[in-house]
Image (cartoon, rainbow, N blue to C red; front, side, top):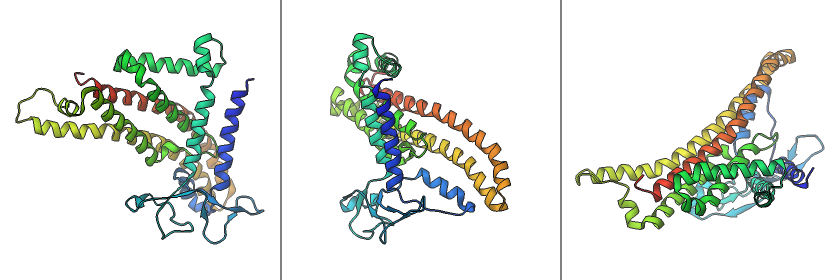
Amino acid sequence: MSLRPILMLVVIVAACLAAHRYVEHHEASNEDAFMVLYTHLMPVPLVEVEHSESEGEATAHGLPTALVSLPLPGFLAVFDGLDGLEGAGHDPRLVMSNLQIFQIAAVLLIFLAFSGVSTYLRTGVGDPITRVLAGTCLFIRDEMAIPTLGEAAARKFLPFFLSLGFFILFMNLLGLVPGAATATASIFVTAALAFVTLLSMLGCGMVVQGPVAYWKNLVPEVPLLLWPLLFLVEVIGVFVKPFALLIRLFANMTGGHMVVLSFLGLIFFFAGVEQDVVSGMSIAAVAVPFAVFIMIIEGFVACLQAYIFTLLSIKFVGMSIHPEH
């Protein structure tokens, strides 16, 4: 067994342990099981906590202190993450959450996973992970990028689309690991990814066509009276495209997790209402198989959503640099 899979496993385990260590844990009754489970879909600030001897209990001196926080200008106060933490009510600060841990882990996994791909493409020697990733890269290049962008443009933009696609894929898959968080289940993360696609559309379109020609070519040859209306519609369409990307990725990753957590919540809910462990175990006999089935589908959805986001990003950029299409 090569060293690379072991290092990848170490990164995943370290990310889960770090998230568990620096996330403040709360307890609740069985009747509140749904609310407690659903909080796992929300970004949680990393705080400096002291774990007591009793398992799962975390205390801090007064209000918990953010592990990492950066100052924010006043107009970005909406992103203040000090709510409920020490320092709340003062200058807004950007607080590191558990999502950043798994975003960093996704980047590290990409570097580790692709460390042998270039060698494999030159020599044909590589392990199964390398062969799968190399084949995926060739698929994105030959079946997605070149047919849409043309060979010359595809070779220029391919590193960006590969980075975007695999970054989303690894974040999606990390969210299926027990104890991990799904970064793409946060609308802030998907909005940032969609914003990158929007900048690529505008930047590439204006560089290739020219700043004025890009906006002019949004509307084809139409009667002059219709041009202002169609121009407005097309400009709105430019921003609607990445908006659809962010909503699709966010909704699919959040929805699947909510279904799994709902099945698990039923176990604690019925056990709490009936005050009977037997009731909870009876529901578990049905809920757990359904949850496992949804988790299997989630693995497919994680790959599918990364593919769709990458494909549509390629098509949107292709429409920007090839207005005749």
